[in-house]
Image (cartoon, rainbow, N blue to C red; front, side, top):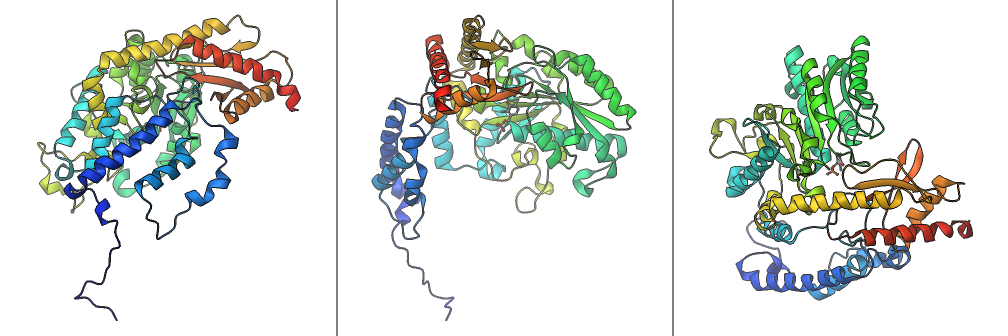
Length: 497
Ligand SMILES: *Cc1c(COP(=O)(O)O)cnc(C)c1O
């Protein structure tokens, strides 16, 4: 029989784990104990324990969840040490040179701890109060650094992929509205949209195509434009591609320039492309997920010239501003264009209560509940400072250049570009046969043994190795020792077969 007047729920412990003033000393103890384990993670010799030691199958009982579980903090930490901390990838380690994962700054971690503990959600003013202003201030700061006009605005996102999604969405809906009077947000799909075309370099990030598909326009709506031998989009090829699509009866609606391609770190000629976008009267987006932060440097500012003309910009603080994931932003030249994503919900942000002085950030975001990710950037800018971050970025760029100069006359290697940012794509060519297989073997062997993590990518259909350098504490000697490992490993390829 159901009783609706009497409480029948019995709680067996665990209630003291709710975060409030009664549990504050427990909180302190948990954080302190967790910190001890994190310290031993930092002291590990290898960037990764290697495949054989992490051996996940033998630990499947640790991953599994028992509904009556009530481990102590020490027991739980011990389990996660065995399962994860002793084995997982350490991005701060000098032998990690694979992907765009940066070592993180201490002030950012403090910001993240506060943001997680207080658990602020930033979508509406009544949930976030001053957090709204802190996020807005971080957006203002980066818009100013990029010299975007006063009408510019932005919002934190989960990453470059989401920022690029918003760029294509705004471009699509703006074109549909201005040229056909269509309101896609209200009314959905229209046949005209199938003719919409975007242009980006053939080295642009895959999220452009993926997002175009998610937005109902299909992969084929993204036209890849040829790049020159420095991996930058060719403006004349862009114009030709636009003209060709027009002749086919399609509708060019936007251009994406990449400021720092994921593989080569190359910057498309932003200023020239912005003029082309203006001539055709179409949306101009700059994907600065990787290279946008270089606006803080002396060395690269000139490569970002013209970004102030962009209709929208993607920037990833979790790639090149030493922030823990997620920390990323989408910027627009004119805040009015956020109308294509804004929604007024009765329970959250009713239109009739709209008040400019107490903004609801949800009106600019495609997310609803959203973390206070701006706080870690705020701590970083206050404690580390933008100038210092700029010098870190210059440092990793010169590291890539040093490596380039060290390898370019080495007959064991073939290089395909001079680094414009902090990546180097190259391959091991001594021995001549099965070059693709040897390079893949090198990458996999170094990873599995826990010696080093190097990425691989394709160039002209062939397999190459890639270093992505994001650690300003790394030295050229650290990198050359990985190069030695590559050579030693390559020699074992024959034995392996
Ligand atoms: C990494 C990257 C992205 C995607 O960003 P996420 O934060 O991983 O979603 C987009 N564009 C470029 C150029 C990138 O390097």
